[in-house]
Length: 125
Image (cartoon, rainbow, N blue to C red; front, side, top):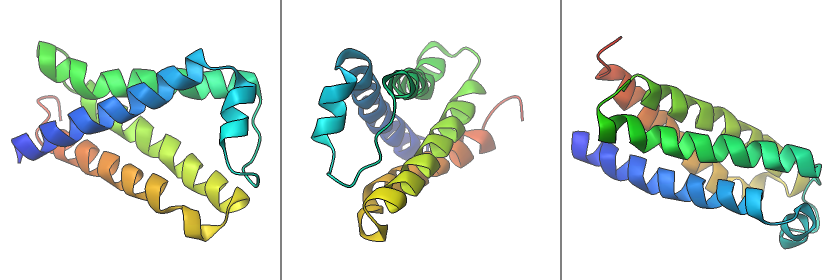
């Protein structure tokens, strides 16, 4: 189970680091034009805020385990990413409809699995 959790953590960390850094580097106009025409438009500041949260969450999935320090932060990072993905599912439903929620929903469920799996083996439980 530890190997499965590590594989998921690495893949999710890469996904969230890519998404977060992209939001931090690209201008808000470029990000909004890349979305679907029905997507909800957020302010540039909010997009940067989400980018910071995704980047920190991605780092929080792997760094505590790599350095064997404060490993209780890994399930908290995964839980924070679950909250972000709940928001992504809701905004996807509001903009594009229920048919487009598969991606954010699966990613959120994988983050929830990592949060549960790492909370279960966390030394400070």
